[in-house]
Length: 310
Ligand SMILES: Cc1cc2nc3c(=O)[nH]c(=O)nc-3n(C[C@H](O)[C@H](O)[C@H](O)COP(=O)(O)OP(=O)(O)OC[C@H]3O[C@@H](n4cnc5c(N)ncnc54)[C@H](O)[C@@H]3O)c2cc1C
Image 1 (tube, rainbow, N blue to C red):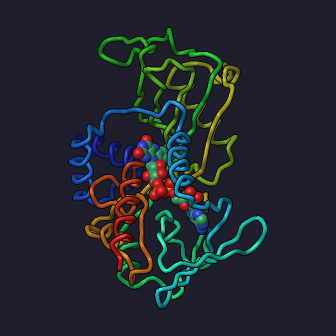
Image 2 (image 1 turned 90 degrees about the vertical axis):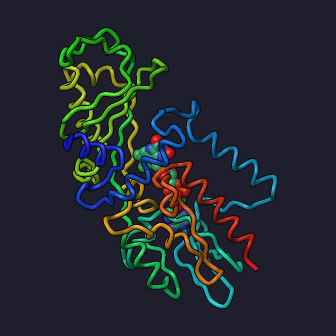
Image 3 (image 1 turned 180 degrees about the vertical axis):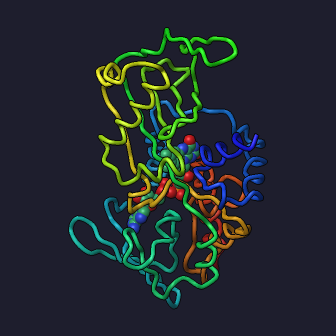
């Protein structure tokens, strides 16, 4: 039971079992029960279709996008916020009476001189900084492997009480060192398998080059399915990998609450001086932090806060 709880915390929440708040875990489980959160589903054409919906709505409202633009500092004083940024053409700045900050937790936590740091001038108030210290960015490395064929279709797994065909395999949980958790695209029978390395496994893989990470994934799969690594490499058509920890624009995968950190998400979500408003998954305090729906709901909550500002 202890081992199961540990692998749930590290695997699902990408969290350090020594750090995570049990209160927030329970709140998350209760929230999941309300929305049938255990049910796995995916958007057929990927998350881009969700972005497309937002893009259409924003275009209709004549909202201007500034893509490939990196915010470097945020100055806020006397009901005036200025975001100083940089795009491929050079420096650029934007001003408004209020700003909605949706930077990931890892970016908000980055100190001066650290990659991805966005400077607040004046600095965020101490209670906001304290809230940032009580939240943690979980770590994940995910590798998607696309093969020429579903080579596992006719394989049997013999470790179970009853031998099972792998053709219906959705998830594969193991005690493997590098990539303990795997899943397929079931019910769609595609030749794709995803490898998931949370927490400690991700810590070891972060910063390594893609070829090394993919090699570790293929090696693990070869052991799990008792298939020659060279055969898997021959069958492998493409691999997809992103190192969220090393990415200066995310600095981790998704957030969790530290022991004793109850209330930190509410504090992070609280507006500052009616000028700075905060959204993003780490500001969700209804149990849906670390999710896309939590992030969207936090944006709606922040938009209402801004509209209610006199
Ligand atoms: C591997 C992995 C698997 C996941 N699986 C699931 C899942 O199955 N289901 C689920 O619901 N959730 C999942 N999540 C979590 C989900 O992706 C996040 O909770 C969600 O995307 C958070 O949205 P957000 O808007 O808060 O942050 P983000 O999506 O991180 O958006 C923040 C944006 O800020 C930008 N940014 C950062 N710094 C700057 C800067 N200085 N200037 C300008 N822009 C900047 C970033 O580029 C990014 O576009 C997963 C996350 C990971 C990493």
